[in-house]
Length: 143
Image (cartoon, rainbow, N blue to C red):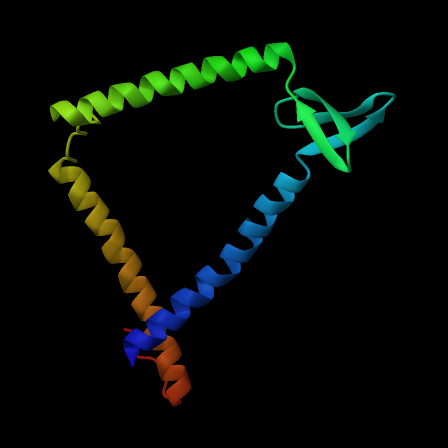
């Protein structure tokens, strides 16, 4: 019974946080680009990067093309990523580690973390016990 109560309480805390974050991320994506009509078509502004792209409407479809400097930056990024992929594939083929191993935490850091979690769990289960006793109609034993 206690496990069920804990799960319900934890789910109650987490559920309200998930939906607004997803909605905000979707709203940000929708507001990222704006289109402005020009004599020859449209100009698309990327509000995040400030990049402008020329767009033309043909057969009911809007086609946007990168400017020359944007294309050069795009090609440079592709080259950089291709080199990175090649390096990763080489490392995997030769058995080299992909990442440098991070050092393990010290005993003091582990003890500190366990202490924090212990205090959290004691407080949390204390609240659960209070709710449980409140539902059963008994008063909590606070000593």
